[in-house]
Length: 205
Picture 1: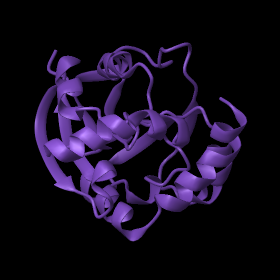
Picture 2: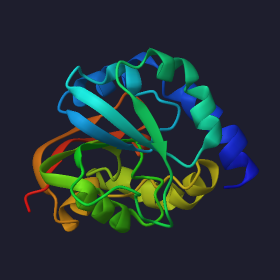
Picture 3: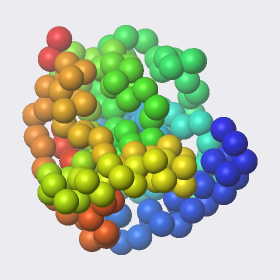
């Protein structure tokens, strides 16, 4: 990662995404997490206070070393052990079928090879394991979607590779995970960023 992505962006993301609206949705949509959890895109640990008591341990996957430093207070208050792991190329360094739950929140937008990442999520999940997601993406409103497509190149440059126009449910289904619950809603922010996909997908085989 470059200087901006490593030294500046984590501060900005932490500041922007720790507000009350974000916290409310984190608490609401993390309820299904249980057992041994992998969080892809751990960032500065903003999800940590909102995990339910059904979580036993958490693997935290994120390339930002500054994010880990900014997470120190949240890590100290965590009610379960947290272990950091790093990608090996594009491979998650966990065994096949070793995780009860995988969590991503506002993360799929920034992953360059999102299809490959979802295949890795599927691989590490146990049969019957849950993928819990809360993501922003492509709006069903044609006018908003047009602007998302137009502004996507600028967004990627300014926001660490974040895409405005990914259709999250279609990407998840294409990975072979079965969407069990899906809610879509408008987040209280400008519409190009505000269309949310939240729910649970299951590894069925």
